[in-house]
Amino acid sequence: MKRLLPLLLVTSLALAACRGGRLAAGGGIMPGVPTAYRPEATSPVRQAVRPGQVNLSPRDLAPVDSFLHARNNQWILGDYAEVYASREYFATALTINTRVGLIQRHDRDELGDKIITLTYVGHPEAASAMANPRILIGTGLTVTARKRLVVRMVKTKDSRRPVYLRVLARGTASRGKGEKVLQRGDNLQLGGALMFRQGRWTWFPMRTTP
Image (tube, rainbow, N blue to C red):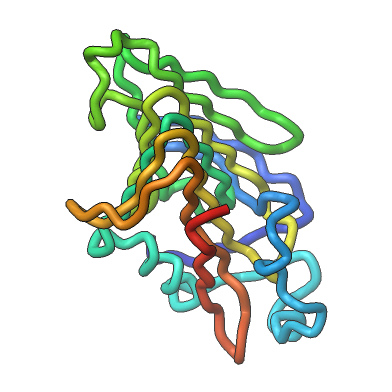
């Protein structure tokens, strides 16, 4: 996941094809997120980027890579799950599980976003963590849904927050690390945003309840 990431915020980016279960698409920022994740107008990132474009080095992206690293071994589960992810960054950092005969997949484009819907259609007795709709983000964040999982890859529009991730789990939901369950509830979330603070790019995790 170490790479130079040019995020073109104005020019429309073409969607690449999906190959071998990996989502080759673009990325972006979900509109209407909580104010807590919006930098102030005086954010120093205004001096750090050119209008309409921000170039992030592997060092800049290190906080995101660290959050998604396998050593964290994070997971979140719900009856229904929704993922909102920056298309440019997560295009090559997302792996999708599609079990033939058990999961129905539907892809569509909507207002520039790439949306993938995974629905469990197998027999209830065949349901399991491995058979249900499931994706791996990076190498260390697994998202699983018992019934339906929707992935929305959206194009970046805000150079002050060039990488954004929000995972929502609804229904009988839980999240944890490794074998340990950290939280249960009807609505849980994971994610965060990369923002420029005090002269460097920093990953700001979001609270785990919406």
